Image (tube, rainbow over all chains, first blue to last red; front, side):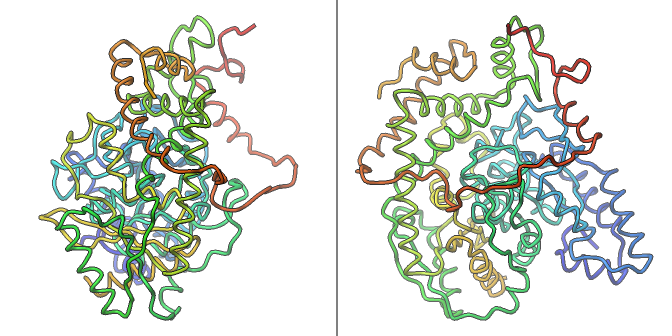
Length: 477
Length: 96
């Protein structure tokens, strides 16, 4: 049996019924990594001994007749921007190549308390800066469906690790599409939750008013189980909301509500290629059959989303990355002549081209004389984009769009042209600007490459997005 | 907005980065492309619009101002992330 491909509930039931051991689950995942990851390169580091030790502890508990929790003994991968104590955390960047995390991120602490087992750290574009993992300083992650294509980004390693069965679920991080787009390219579920729903404590910051940690998995139910554990207020992250976190799995099973109204923003469908359009159309047909109503809506400021997004995130990133200066952590240039020389040479050596590009762009937008024309103006446009969504959600319960204008592209295809790469994020960044919960749901194939749709709900209404995702999953697969 | 090499060099310096000539040329072009694209934001009248700093609506999140004990071994782990230490202090080049 391939335990590495089972769902969380299947694994839990099997463990509880002593059909297999936790050690066998971990061994299946490690075997899969050994067989496939040489080519795919989903992981930057793997921790077989630590994982097997945790597995043996779970097995002894089961042997002793103790009850185990739903996530106990379940293996997961962690995007390399999230800190796991005593494990490497490079953020995909050479400057942090030898950095070992001194503590657990809040999401990791919560998953460890629930008994889940970290199997390794996954590849990503450095600090999340990219849509293909080609900006990782440690090499690209290939798409398991086609090794000539990218896995997407920035959480490309996370998506590849899940779809190929190297672990049961993954933690990714999404600033402008970094969970949803790789989930779409790899054909899995990936949930960017509402900003503030999940603690960012212990995550290496990209853009602090956008960053959201979230689960990536092979089913909606797995997503719901993980989210119920990681979500919720955290005294170590003052931007987490105090709102109560429902048990999403229970909500999926019990909460009956009236059929929902889905809005299709016309701006997202103008000029969309015919194959993607056809796939989304047939997905909408599934929803109609289930009693959903589908209407056209308008989000008039959509065309400004990319420009607005990139001005804001590069500004926030340039400020966040100032802490990487060769003093407190990371690479330190040898024999500095003075402090400024230490800063400059450590950063210049340790940062790749895309990181430098974004720092310079962000520093420019924040600098004296340009601040009002660029940064401040973008913040105001962000307000208009948020208002578009606010108005839309007065009319509809959910918004559905494609996740990406195209399926996975070829390795090397867009890497030389930053602006073209930025435009690949056209369908994901709007929801990030508004901080809304939005899940990628696999809904078809173009050739052998997966296509995904985004199902978005109003702020903090994760349950609605999950229910629609499950409704589609159940009638589609 | 015209982006020239001098501006890119100035901003790189503000960012504590050193660019070689090739990088300067490349970033000058690419920054011009991206900021040229961003100029479409000027089409919108934002004179009466408040800026968005964050989306949660939270304000003034306070906590008790108290010392929380942090285990000694964890303190050691934190300090040892620094690349150069002496007697438990982080070493930097002479500043004064």
